[in-house]
Amino acid sequence: MAPVVDVHTHIYPPAYVSLLRSRKDVPYMRTFPDNPSAGERLVILPSEDAATSTARGRPIGPEYYEEEEKIKFMDKHHIDISVISLANPWLDWCDKGEAAEAARMINDDVEAVCARHAGRLYAFGTLPLSAGAEAVVEEIKRLQALKYSRGVIIGTSGLGAGLDDPAMNPIWNALQETKQLVFLHPHYGLPASVYGDRANDYGHVLPLALGFPLETTIAITRAILSGVFDHYPNLEILLAHSGGTLPFLAGRIESCIAHDGHLKHAGKTEGRRSIWEILKSNIYLDAVVYAEPGLKAAIEASGMDRCMFGTDHPFFPPLEDEGDEWVSVKTNAEAVGKAFGTDEAAREAVMGGNAVRVLRLG
Ligand code: 5CU
Image (cartoon, rainbow, N blue to C red; front, top):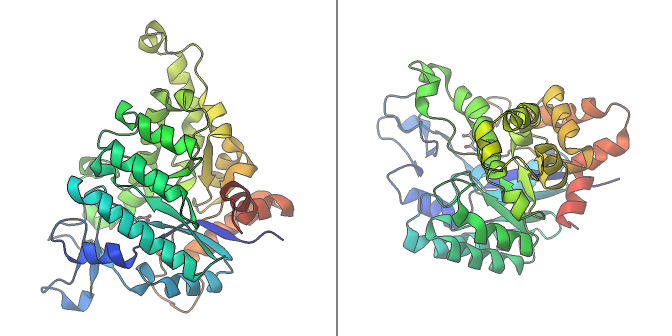
C-alpha cells in the first residue's frame, strides 16, 4: 500500500514568524488593542487589513508555526508524509537587500524541521524573488543540495511582472536544469473592485474561493502564452487547487488562441505546444478542490498519474469541534475516493503513490 502524502501543506517556520511579528504593514502578525480577546491575528491578504473590516486577518496559533502540531495533524488524518512549504506571501514583500539572507534562513530552518522528522517531512523551498534573478538562481542551486528539499514554492508575481516576464528565464532554466518541481500557489487574488461594495459581508469567501483559483489560472495561462513551456520543455509545475480553473477552461483558451488574428499574424500559433499537451507533460495538479466534479476535470486534463492529494493545512481549520478530523481534509479525501470508485490503485496513486514517484520520497 502506498503511503498517504500531503503535497499542499504549509508552515510559517520560526524565522518567518519573527519577521512577521516585527512588521506593521501587511503581511504581519499582531494583537489589536481594540480587540484583545481576538488574540494574535495573522494579516496576509491584500484586502484584509481594513480597520473597519470584520475580516481583519485570521486567528493564528501553534498549528501555523509549530512542527509538532504538523505531526499531530498528520497522525490524526493518517498522513504518512508531508511536503511542507512556506505559506503565502513568502518573501514577495521583502526588501531587495534582505531577501536572499531571509530565504537562506527560512530554508535552513525548514530543512532542520524536516531532519527532526526524517522520513515524514520533506519541503518545497522559498525563493528570494524580490532580490532579482541572480540571487534566486543561487538559492535554487543551494536548495538542490539540501537533503529534504524537493522543489520550490512560488507565487504568481514572479520577479514582480508575472510569470510571462522574460526576466524569469534564468530562473526557469535553473529549475529545469536542477529538476526541481515548482509549486505555483496564489496569494493576490483579483482586484478588490470585482468583489463589490459588500465584499466584507462575505468574509473571505470571494477572494479565497474565486480570487485564488482565477489568479492561478491567469498566471499559468500567461506563462503558457509567452512560450515558457516551449522554451523549457522539461520544466515541471505543480498547480495549487487543482489548477485553479485551468482544466475546465483549457478548451476555451485553446479556442481563443486558434481564433486570434493578432497571434496568427505574429506567427505565434504555428508549432506551439497545446495546453492539453502541457497539462499532460509539464503540469501536476494537487487534489485540493473539495468535490468530485472538479477533481474529475483535473484527472481528465492531466491524467490520474499527475494528481496528488493535499490538505492546505493549517488553513481551513474547523470552526468548532477541535477534537475531530478536519472537514476540509475529509472532504478532499472523500472526493478522491468517489472519483475513482472501485479503482483502488488509482485512488492510492493520487493519495500518495504519485507524490512518492514524482518527488522521490522515502
Ligand atoms: O485562508 C487563507 O487566507 C489561505 C491562505 O492565505 N493561503 C492558503 O494557502 N490557504 C488559505
